[in-house]
Every structure is written in structure tokens, then in C-alpha cells.
Length: 81
Image (tube, rainbow, N blue to C red; front, side, top):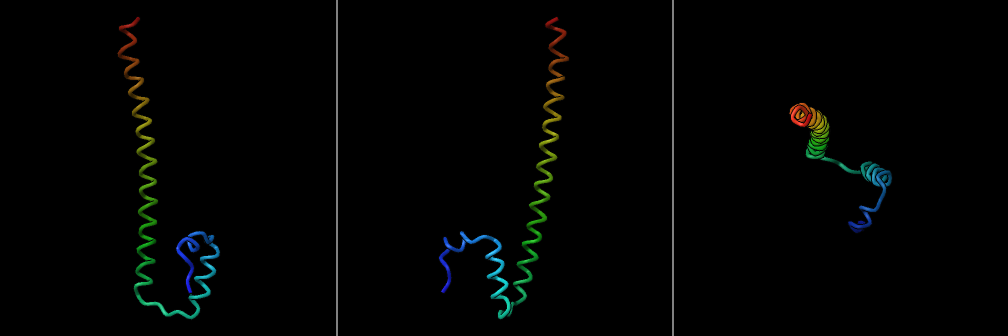
């Protein structure tokens, strides 16, 4: 009998890995098993690329914000002085 989904989600990663490895000793897998792992790895790479792009966009946004503030100060200050 299997665990409930709630119990399964409550298990720590190490316990899930241990149980998987225990059951994998007597299980035969098909090619879909390897394809799913390749898809998971591709998704991990895409996620990391998106995180990197997000960091760059944040940095560029901050640079543009600073440049805008400096520009406004340079344009407005002569009229105030």
C-alpha cells in the first residue's frame, strides 16, 4: 500500500531518495524514464537561464533608474538656481 499524497509530500528529500533507491533495485524501466530525466535537466537549465536573465534585467533597470535621476537633476537644477 502506498502513502497518501499528504504523507508523501511531508517526507524529507533524503527519505524519498532512500525509498526510490530501495525500490529501484527490483524495477525495470523503459526509455521514457530516461527521456523524463533529460526533460527535467533541460527544464533546470532553462530555469537557471531565466534566473540569470532576471538578474541582468534588474541590474540594467537600476542603472537606467540612476541615469534617469541624474538626467532629471541636470535638467532641473539649472532652472532652480
